[in-house]
Amino acid sequence: MVACILVIEDDEASRMLLVYLLEADGYRVHSASNGREGVRAALEHWPDLILSDLQMPVMDGYEVARLLHADPGWRRAPLVAVTAFSMPGDREKALEVGFQDHISKPIDPERFVRQVEAYLSPASRAVRPPR
Ligand code: MN
Image 1: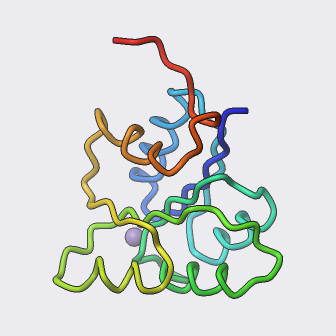
Image 2: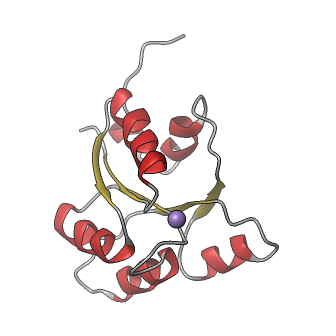
C-alpha cells in the first residue's frame, strides 16, 4: 500500500508545497502546523515517514523527535528534518535527537519526493510512469 506521510511545518506556504508534491505523486499525507499537533498526528495516524521542520512555535522539531522516541506507543517511522537551519552543527544536532536525515530548505521541487522516498520501503513507494 502506498505510504502515509506526515508533514510537520509551521510555514503555511512551505507546508502546502510539501503536501502538494507528495499528494501529486500519489502519497497519503497528513499535516500539522506545529510540533505538538505533529506528535499527536504521529501517534494517531501511524505514518510511514515523518517530515518535520525544526524551528516552529509551540513545540520545535527537536522536541518532536525526543517525545516520539520516548513514547512506547509510537510505531517507529523514519524522521527527516526539512529545515532552513544551516549553521554548522545543526545537522549533527538533528541527527543526535533521532532524525535520520536533514534536507535543507528551500527544497528542490523536482527532486524532493525522490529524496524522501529513500526512507520508504520499496513496496510503499508511489508508482509513477517512467519518464
Ligand atoms: Mn519553521
